Amino acid sequence: MKINLSKAAEELLTKVLGNRPGFIRLMYDSEGCGCAVSGVPAFRIVDEQEDGDIVLDTNVSDLTFILDSQKAVFFEEELNLATDPGDLSLRLSSSGQHYGLYIFPRDERAVNA
Image (cartoon, rainbow, N blue to C red; front, side):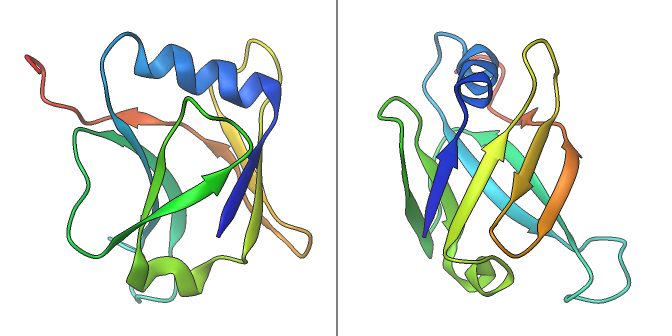
């Protein structure tokens, strides 16, 4: 899988990461949605990879995206991630659909890491 980032999306995620290391986890969050196939995409900044994660290809070298391999079925092979300069939310899409228009990345790294 691959995520193509716009320049503005790259800048936003770089700002969220700050000077601390971390991975950007693409999630398919179905908690509270009533069914495992009724979920929403989410981006979480995490400290480390988990067993079963895959690293996604990107068009940028400074950001590492990961995804639980069992959740890959919910996304197309090539994704686009964009935002407008100054916005705090991301738009995830593919050639066939929009996954989310207002996705706010959340930092879940340990506070003192």
